[in-house]
Length: 344
Image 1 (cartoon, rainbow, N blue to C red):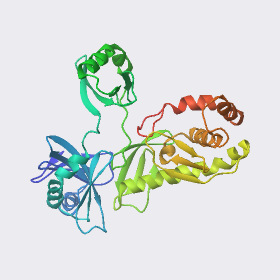
Image 2 (image 1 turned 90 degrees about the horizontal axis):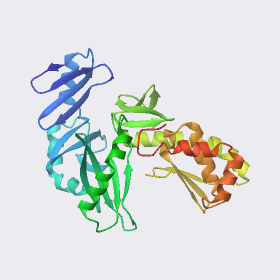
Image 3 (image 1 turned 45 degrees about the vertical axis):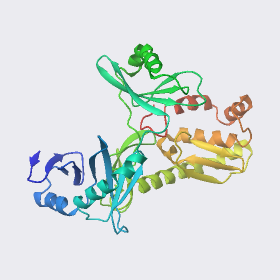
Image 4 (image 1 turned 30 degrees about the horizontal axis):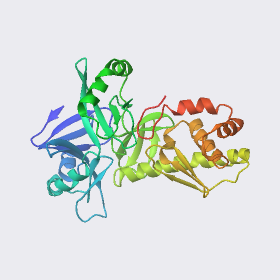
């Protein structure tokens, strides 16, 4: 590690380009080992930072900066629970910080905890385990769910007291500790430089650099750094999902004796696919995160709904008739979720 008057440099072996991060008065430069000092100085002085941390509303908020050649000024937005800054290439940090301060009240409102949710913490053997209390009108009883990142989600009926929720969580402390002991927390999927993602069932890291288009190289999804990373990754996943779906749709449609319906690909938070009576099938763009044979299961599952618009016995009998190991694939699919970079 080397120090400079206005910034701190970290030389790392696992990165391929210079990254400039800022936060509360400090500039941190991450650079490949052996990077000449003049290149680092140029990056600090000329390049738009890729992100940083801002203290606002009594908390630390991470923000990402996306170069926007078509933008004439700095724009502030909120996406996936974080702040996104779109700025013309070369915008100095001073202007970005000023824009963040100007729009602070606006993005704090949009980052507020969703209505009906509270946050609390459970102490387990000296370790703090965060949990979210979600009040749901249709809930009858208290339920507890351990999320892939080892945090907890408590669903509660409206009006239930905070003390009763705490007692409920503490009563399940032994079970919670047993489930998360030694288990590595999953990373949430994030379309950002350094963000986590699954592709074909394997975890990869998104890395932005100077290049023409996206490509998968080993455990890195390389994307251009001169355009929206979110849009680039989303398009990459949509293309991969559609390619696999188009490959197997005719086969399974023929097996079911139905015509191949129109297909749409978009992001969905909880579903891998949806079948509409139009007919039309919508696939989650994040199906590309799944192993190929599980994408095939999603395809067959949604096509089967054209014959059986329910999940009763005739539906599963018809599905097993064209996919003998459908039950096994269904069980494996439970290990994956569109919002988590963790699988079987």
